[in-house]
Length: 632
Image (cartoon, rainbow, N blue to C red; front, top):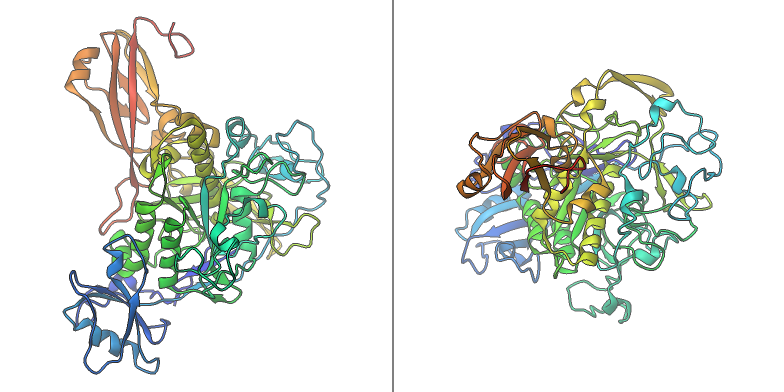
């Protein structure tokens, strides 16, 4: 039996009952071909059943069944066909599944599998750490901000660190300080955190927690807003089935990276935590772990639907399967169809009117040093995040390869552990150090929240697909740093280990995310400037990320009208991230370039691979071009 290891610090497991030989199991492995997974470790007395189109009820002779909608009040006709079927817990689960599968009213039967995790652990503080001194001007007054290298890495550590300089290189960050010049967040943006519970009353979080006003101002024990959830003031505890969110270190740490309150002279900062004037993005806590207990698949599906139906437009997911447990997109679709359809429901139905149509789910790649991303993140329609250290190198634990779309700081035991807030720390500010793709993922989610905050303020309107494309192309090259070897320190073993970086080349997605570049890309269609009659060669780094030379380009589209208008007689080409084009007439026109991010082939069906990213450019051709790339 495999376990779903997901973090050196905070290891989360989903659906621990997955079989090692999943690739040998098919949808025809049962007598009826309708049973998509297995009974081992599944909930007793309960099944998830997908009714045939047009079927109104489920009656099985000789079985006493209690049937209820899996997602009450769903807006989706497809999701409304999923039913939660209850029966006597003493009955054999497989036998009942087979009886139900015989019904013509049923298309699919799934066992309800538990969500599991291993206890999280924090990493020790760097030795000799002292109170930070401010050798430069910082944008906010939070005392721990100088230690948050993942936001702004100068290459010079604050006083008190005794670390080899090779472990910290200037620029190995998300370029957040420059992004903060344009926006620091907006309270109209709601970000859901599916994780352990967020410490909702933490001094560095409470002002940025989402509040369901109807429940907050209503009566205890009453569903005041009639959304099907009682007392869901800051979200919902799906483990206990109530609105009482209980604090968890991992969930709190993730939430702090996204939106800890900024400029409050307390602890550290969050990426979209605002300016200290009540303008940070809002955090919705959807709790799926509590102590040793966890929820089941149907509750996880409900969490995604809850987020969509209650205003969240982004979901951070620092959990996932053990890589290799699910071998392809088609297996994910077949064996976890309830979860997959719930994620798709969120991405299709979440929205903020006038700002974004559709939601975006962002997942961690996993921490097993495995040459494929873990599902659900590996699915070709979802963003999947791998982790880098404070010197641009791949974090020693990160998964890499097909399915990994983008990188972000995740920490590294040599030095680059990430500092943010904790629910249990006895430190004066309540912070601690962690590492993992669990920590890298909220950096991408936080940048997405900043982008939507910028959209609100600028009056931009996006689709979730447009935001996804912007995120995956707002990167810098990370492949150039994956050469030779690196050392990392194992705190548990008390020893240094040497790791080869060669396997990570071209395996970490489009590059590492740049928050400032993401905002700049939102200001309009990129313009490419060329001189009439001059054969030009232009790097696509600015538009497809710093690793553009290593992407697989699938098409370059130019209409006949544009070819004629710009005098393009030789077909343009892209080689190693360089666009080669010659225009003989002055004018303007649009071209479209497509590339695969996260592999050399598109994912889907029986393949695990990347997703298609499309960018549109305005070609501007003049008789002369200024040295700065603009008009003379």
